[in-house]
Image (tube, one colour):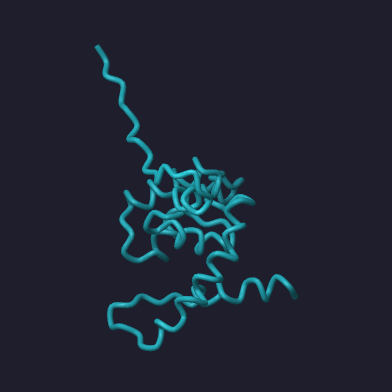
Length: 136
């Protein structure tokens, strides 16, 4: 007799509130940082993992599956000669740009001093500039 594998119950606030529903989709650790990475365009899994220091491969894979399920991101295979699988934001996922921009502005005062353990990627500084660049 084969056992059917049960999918774990999706975590939810179970509140009829738009903020709670939004957090159901993007409130898990790493999700908004994956969105940040995908705002620049399609990315391979290995590139996402390299630019998200500290995320485990299990967590990254899980978040990407969740983001696909919630229609924030999609996965597609590039045609030859690349023949690589990439992840990219859907229109709904790209709609998170103002959220990330506001969060980046809110968090900017915390950047006064860099900690020795802080990772840095130059493209991370582009998020607050994206709305300005889009207007040009």
